[in-house]
Each structure stands twice: as structure tokens, then as C-alpha cells.
Amino acid sequence: MSLRIALFASGSGSNAENIIRSFLNDSKFEFPLIISNKKDAFVHERARKLDIPSFTFSREDFVKAEPILDILKEYQIDCIVLAGFLLKVPEVLIHAFPDKIINIHPALLPNYGGKGMYGHHVHEAVKASGDTESGITIHCVNSNYDEGNIIFQAKCPVLPTDTADLIAEKVHALEYDYFPKVIKNLWS
Ligand code: GRF
Image (cartoon, rainbow, N blue to C red):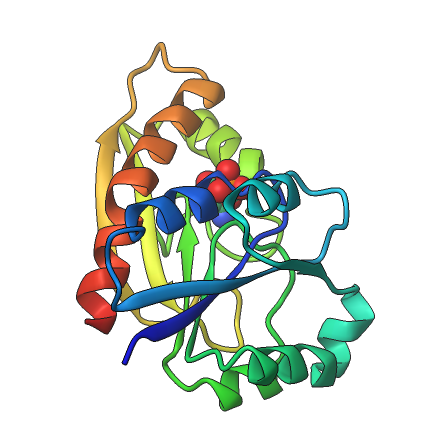
């Protein structure tokens, strides 16, 4: 039987697309559903091209959690991957999918995590700190932002001449390379 994974994304969705494409020839994993909290997010366009249903739920829907639980049930979802998803995951959902929700963070947690540390803010903060490395963290999701058990980290060098955009590029390259592999290792 295959494992059915829902992808949650708030923006471009390049990670979501990369994950789906990485598993196209692997019948053990299915990605039957994409969920977003933004109706104009580019991830919907990607979903359309990939022929995968995508839905938008409001912040209120996420707070209530019931509408999200319903659709996850309808699509018989086993696990959830947050790939650039910016809303807090409701407690009810965390309890309904124990150890079955993972997130990717574009820095080396516990540094540069927590509220307000998302997207470009993270890379700007790394740049401003003068740190000589950044990277990615893939972790389990619990009730606190970015505080679940760390499953995997990978690093990239940050040069003094690197802009925040360049750091973002390096981090994205790590994400594309490792996120599908980590999903496969974790849930095979
Ligand atoms: C990624 O860098 C991810 O780590 C972060 O948000 C970004 C999403 O990019 N949480 P994309 O939407 O997958 O292109």
C-alpha cells in the first residue's frame, strides 16, 4: 500500500513541485492533495500543471481545524509535509497526525527560528549576523514554531560577499536535493 502525503504550501511551491516530481516513479508514495492558505499562491498553478487538486483554506478554517481534518480524511491522507507553509498548525491536527507532520526551515535551527523568522527574513538575519554558514533543518512539527525534534540538517557556506538572495539560492538548492530524500528515508 502506498503512503498518501498532503503537501501544505503558502507561496511559490517550488519545494512542493520538486517533491512531487522526485516521487513520480515511486509507487510507494502518493501526493494526492495540496493545501494552501493563500488563494493566489503560485503553488496552485503548479498543482494545476501537475494535475493534483489544490485547495485554499482561510486562517479561520485552520483555527477551527475541522475543515482541514475533513479534507485530509476525504483524501485518506497518512502524513503531512509543510513545504513553505506559513500558518501555525492547529493543535488538533498535530494530535490527529502524531509524528506524521514534518516541516522544512531554511536555516540551521535552533538559530533563526520562531515567530517572524520565515522566508527572506531568515536569510537577511543570517547575512546580518556574519555567520559563515547556513543550511536547512527538517523537523517534526509540534505546537511551538520550529521546535519539534530535528530529523535532518545540511549546511552550506556563507561568504562575506553573499547577499541574502544568494544565501536563499544556496539554501533552496539544499532543499531540492535533500527534502525528497529525507521524506523517503523517514517514511519508507
Ligand atoms: C523554503 O525556503 C522553505 O524552507 C521555507 O519557505 C521557502 C518556500 O519556498 N519555509 P517554495 O515555496 O517551496 O518555493
